[in-house]
Length: 547
Image (cartoon, rainbow, N blue to C red; front, side):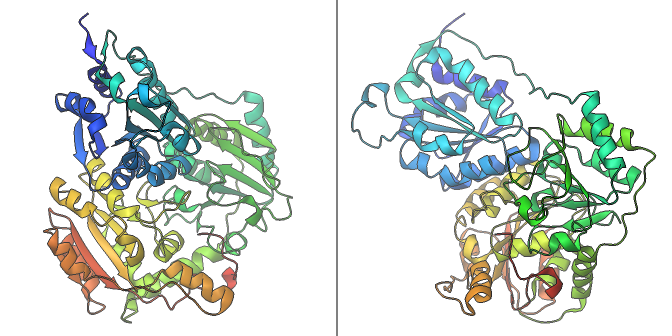
């Protein structure tokens, strides 16, 4: 067996893991790695900021379940990855971050651009390591991908010292193995079924874990067979088709969401793939009286208001299917849901709203009309995210993507590019506030170069809208939230892509439908009026839960 450079072996290991793209910016300390990759099957996607590249890797992980890969060099190249690596960590998206580093021999002293990246990234990764020897390349790469993709998935990191990557090595990649999930025993399944059968008014709270596991069909069948209604978190949107009468809608924006969805009357809560990183249990179990059945891939987090009576740990699709079988023959009346009635009623009424600047419900109604049931809407972070989480109807899982763990602005534009790479057959629309849009606007050059026809909608109001909303509620005024914008149309045109500013209420739907026919990325600027409260109704309460 002939010897290879460690960088050649490293790329072979990436190929063995099924990596198709690496997103990032090359650097002097990654010269060998990039040269090795140039002769491989892996496409390197140069981005315009490392954060954008890491968000693209984040989205690949969300949509495929296989770790997306991003690359930065040492020092500032690595620290620019931090926000998106942390996003993948808290949103449970499998991601492997690669960073260059100086030679091992200078790590004991002050040195140009050297910082301890393993220490920097430790709090925001499931596991990370410095590649200290070329001989351990296969083990380190396999471990990084295995841990990133195992439940609950997240980010990992490998630091690549320059002298190690130059060295010769005699090794080969380790075979890839799919992560193994345990299964609950018969006793636990029967006990969970007994709790559910004895309930007077059970309810399901479904989170992102159901989507990650591909378990939405199993949850829908459990709901159909038993009549148990299902509420979704922001990141669980699409677990139930919004048109299903047992779909309660999305909870977690206002304090009264849970009450209006039926949680006050519920005596048993089935927490399926529910993650405390999204919303705290204190909002739906204030009195700590509810019996809780957990269905998840990992044991429940400790919380005073989240003490499960039964935990069914394993592959969610399998567990939910078995639970439906155990509960067959027991039927509950799901009844009506005031939250669903208020939200969907307001959305339906919005089609006749001719106010301009446009109000959020009308804008979301137009987007829903333009997109098919499997098309993808990616939300950035801001007041528009709360509107999308609250109101935008989803038919299928992973069709409304909301970053809600770390909730960092600048997520949508680069993530939309990656969504289009993963699903070129689907329409992809991003919705951005004018605050977050400029944080990664430069990736429109990447989109243009890749010819990924994503339609990027910018809701423009020249304010950090979610902070304005919260300041006004708390203090009766807002401050430090106003700014000026560039001409987004001319700015987009400088990237060589078509762009339009809506000047009347009928412009938006027409421009959006046209943009979706193009084979290039585009921008639509929509003046927005946030004067209508995202709470929609006084019934939903004043206390804000979501951020």
